[in-house]
Length: 467
Ligand code: ARG
Image 1 (cartoon, rainbow, N blue to C red):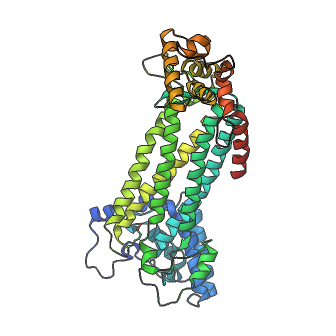
Image 2: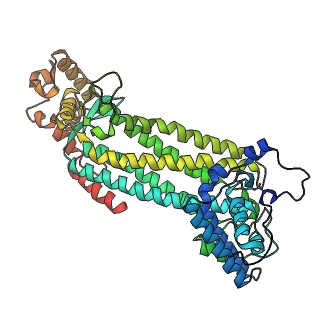
Image 3: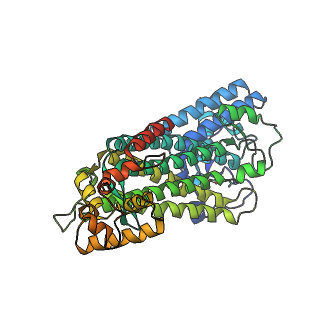
């Protein structure tokens, strides 16, 4: 390497041929992105190797030049990973840092790498490669979480708890059914990520600065080498499209919105007032003043992180809304929100993968709350309907029975037939007590999508096939 005798290039002035003064120091720092876009190094190097191979294929680079560029880039990759690479803010971004180091290592041949390419199509390619990898990792973690949900749900196909509307106990459901509702949300989120991946998987390279390049790049070759499904069809769009980053953040925001709802439930359920679940100690923290406290910090923090991701989505939408075609420096602002959205989403999934299998439901407390909440009142109304009472009248009669139960501070099933019927009716007979049991109520909803234990078991089996 470094076989020719070209003098070391003045790397600090790599782009300043047409200027008569050096960049202002503040402007240099203000416009630089290397502090955060160095995260793209591996994807940048991978795309550069492919670009160089393509240049060789169309006879712009000789075999020797290609070889030397590839070895140089490989060395840079190793330097970066060994933390011996000297990142320089004067070189603005990851692309210029790597290119200038290449020239330093292999000499003039390094200066040929950027032929027929611009940082505009380069960075667009790098971010797509980065995000594609990130999505694959996130989907793998989501799959773990989907498995954790089905496993826990399977243990609790018969565990009765109150289902809520308006946070008031409404009807008996099973804990397994509730967990499978979470599963459905996450399965849709995974689908949205897969969708986003499909649309982002097009190659920008070859668009160069904005109009394409007279070297007639073999874009199909590069697309194939880099695992893209095809090329971005329009060069202007190729360098300026950031839809994929917005789509990712939108998906992340919705996923976090779901997580936030789950976590809100965990916070409520683990409170002393509910006591439905016990969270593992290792996922909770204490209070600095109140010795008795066990705070559900992890679910609270996940709930809180939602705001941060929503912010990134709005930041990206706002970033793009005023931009004329094609590339504008504004686009450099896409990275920090996107990177943080990736990290935050990944961290929240990791936390939930650790937490979900270890939440310990308190079956008795769940059952007591179900019994206390008159949750089989609808079953009583349905019972009356089966005895030919029109539903609206049944609703009224049951309402009165609930009022009597409240007044005597008893659950519905503790009322006598006389108390249940009230003064003017005798429709309710002895067979009602079966209907009033919370287990019977859940088991009666025995249809696809219903809460009956047999249905939940089927739902789990179907769900497992979809992971
Ligand atoms: N650091 C820049 C970015 O992230 C790379 C592209 C620079 N292109 C340009 N024409 N200045 O967007």
